[in-house]
Image (spheres, rainbow, N blue to C red):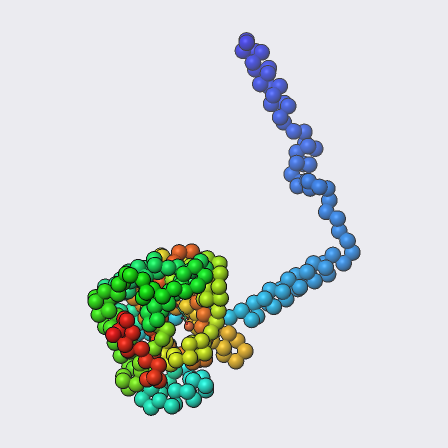
Length: 318
Ligand SMILES: O=C(O)CCC(=O)C(=O)O
Ligand SMILES: [Fe+2]
């Protein structure tokens, strides 16, 4: 191609790209893809109405939503953190039958300093070994260390009937030590006579998962009061054996407080070795959030004021 021919072509291309004055102006104006938007009479009033209805719907759905406060974060380590509360009347009436076992006040406490890492690991390993002998088809596997009842598909078997002697002398020694430390912490927290509280049943390991429930026992997430669910409980303690946000998600423990008309959730994030202690009356209504993934292991270690409900001679403690 000769140079003059090339130049002429380049000039022609430039001329084609250059818009005329009129064309340039029309390109600056945004053109609507579907033509001009239709308007109608009272459009502004309608828009305002839609906005107000939206705002009302939002307020309606959020009005009764409980506010949330985290009492114990997974990442933090607490020597002892707690709140005192007014005891529920029914609870007070019941506990008044037992001198020495009447709390100075009701309340809830969390501590990461009662159970050591070695002790919580030993209990965690024991829980995993026991659960491997059974397992619910639904989301909650429990093993009652007093009776030996262990979830198995959609029923219970007696784990103590199996050949395996799964409670070693060292497991028993560790549990006795842990139990006595918790008993001291409860007596100290609520200013009780140490000898007036007795370990009671059900004393159990739990493993919670995201599986759907197959039997009512699998529905671990319902709000409840321990004193109503387990008649013998006066003081509840829980030992968490693994970690929220690491071994599982969801599964936080939630106290559900009612203050006049509003609801407040106070949450505890499980942490390996963390102990949660509370009076078992209606002042401590609670639930466990559904686990969304992983397996959550814990141990429920309850105490009663009623010596006839004590289980001091169980397999684990005898
Ligand atoms: O596992 C927990 O954190 C609580 C379980 C519980 O509420 C119960 O056993 O009554
Ligand atoms: Fe409970």
